[in-house]
Length: 313
Ligand code: ADP
Ligand code: MG
Image (cartoon, rainbow, N blue to C red; front, side, top):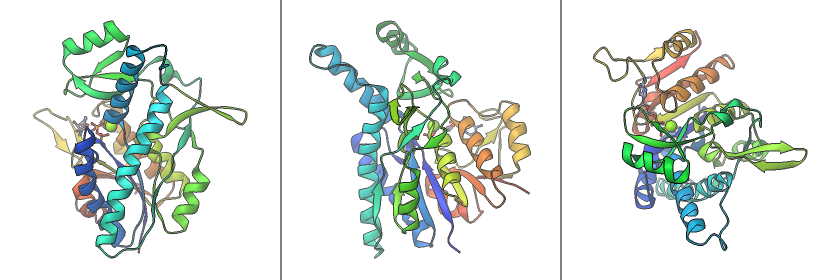
């Protein structure tokens, strides 16, 4: 029986720059088409860390070169741009892959806004890494020259960090739901969604980047999905990650996940939001399962052969 699956794509599904993205999405499309071919209903969300960083840097350079002509571009607008160009590549790669397999199915990207709370404490404590990795020296210069906040990211170098409030609801959810119910493949909540706060009927862009893992969790719940699959750069989550006593996790219960989270096994900004999102979805309703694995292991993962899954007993 086909399942309704929300797939959250990580950075490695998209590459770090324009040519890399064009190549990466071809492989990504194959992995997704495999699931569609097996009869699953697939909804795709994706991250945008490197992309939104690149767009933001480009827009900042423009303003710096000619401040009279180019006013600074809000971060929410940069997120919207990233949804547009990532969705463009993804939906085309998937369209082509499906046509190559003789599958007639519309694929569309929905520009998605996600409501956040203006009072969210995250606005005072930036935690979300965006943009390229920097050396300590480069990072120090960005702090001095541009007032960026930077953070060491899981032993891989320094990155700029921005506020990452929790997603509350998805503005375009009815549209997404209708498209999914009609049997179409939808790309939604790209980059965690464009963060907005509500002011009556007005939606105001917020200076933040929502974590795509949390946004995908909300999307999966609101679409009443069976499965949330978070595809990333590791096949499984681990405890004692990177240490000699590292241990990969297979099938775990929500209580085990909670215990490992409280023991600090997952790095904030990278694996922690995935495990937290996976836990929240798995507990949200009986029968819902979450999976964290590698892109090209998605098919095996959904068959229960690999990945870290969180399932209620
Ligand atoms: P994505 O772009 O898919 O969101 P991230 O870089 O944000 O990817 O998160 C995945 C990374 O999290 C892995 O590549 C790994 O380096 C890091 N990580 C941190 N803690 C753990 C852990 N406990 N188990 C596995 N990976 C971890
Ligand atoms: Mg991430």
